[in-house]
Length: 176
Ligand code: CMP
Image 1 (tube, helix red, strand yellow):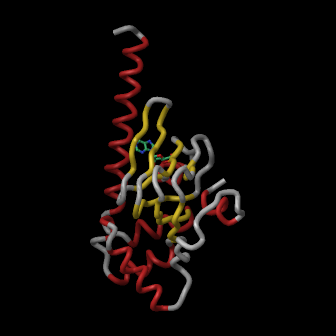
Image 2 (cartoon, protein in one colour):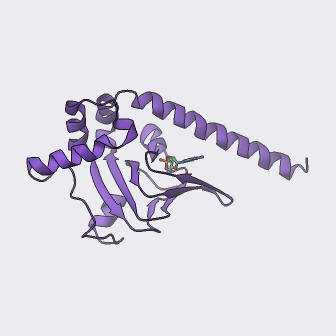
């Protein structure tokens, strides 16, 4: 079950005091605050005010506690996540953990190919997340200049790392 669904049905806890309202709600002044916050995220640096407004409409911001499982390997995934604050880890395999820091994103693979989550992602510290659902993802790509290119570069890097790791494991098991 996806993160937001689990939060809403109470199956995982989060700090209601620390939680930000979904950016789609609230009076105009609040919306402006949220847009200001988006401006601090590196991938939104090139966005115009109009583009940021569009992102604010489709994005939700959540604070989650350390230890929260944000994505589960093998599960279906309908959300794209961007870390605003805090760190998480992608548990790519039993012996491989990749740190994910502010400004980095995860969850793009399932959104792009519709397949199950390729790794489990867990919050290492309290994490503030920007969450975009699958149905809004195409709008995000349209609104944020350069995001498609950043996504492709990040995917290439992740595939390359996975292949290198598979090669190392293959060599180790062959006794080389
Ligand atoms: P997805 O498969 O949707 O859900 C798990 C996420 O973990 C995946 O998308 C990526 O965002 C992330 N992930 C998978 N492999 C790696 C890796 N090698 N390095 C960093 N992040 C990864």
